[in-house]
Length: 262
Image 1 (cartoon, one colour):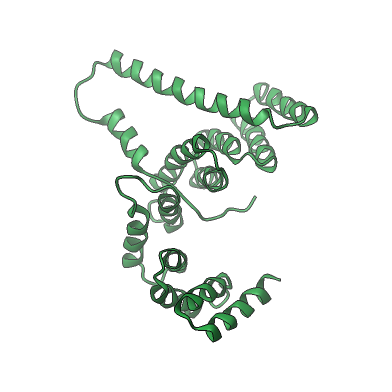
Image 2 (cartoon, helix red, strand yellow):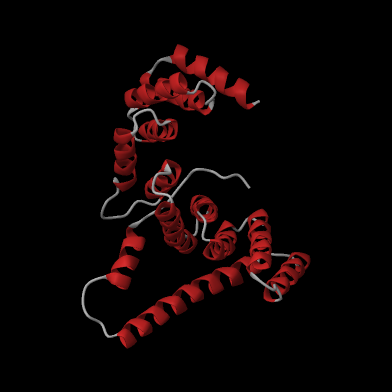
């Protein structure tokens, strides 16, 4: 599975923190009831998604998954559970259901408690967010990716990749009250580290999406100065120069793009 750098919305994570530690003086019993309701609602979501996903599978595929699920129930300890959860996540991803694969990757991350595990869970959910046309699935993946990338960042706040992934999911699924959230996060990262190739690449790509072709060229040309091997920059530059009406530069970069990808 390719660890694509995409990424995820922190608004729900902030809301969760407010609910856990926030305003007011709810009695402990009421807090426990609220938490139980939240967990039941989430469980209903994954149960519904699993039921829908399994409806698409053949009998042979269902039987294979059943055997793996049974081995999860019989796993003697965390190490064994992690191996089975990884297998379930990979199996569901290969079957084209990244939203379910993300659930098992997240379950693994909750046991492993490593930034890599949380990053993989977030990336898996982010792929589900990008690929699905179902609003229900996109909403679910969006909310779960929040938790995953926020968890990775909490373990290692200095890792820019986690922050880039988080910002990219904001751009993929923008909050209605702040549609520029992801872009602003990337710009802030760029301000802190102007020569970060990943940040520049994504800012360039997003500049093309919004028709800011001059800014896109500036950022993507800088990417190639810093990392000539980033051939994907040529692909984006072909679009950016085309947008500026520079057919020669567009064709030149398109040729480099095709040569590298073939």
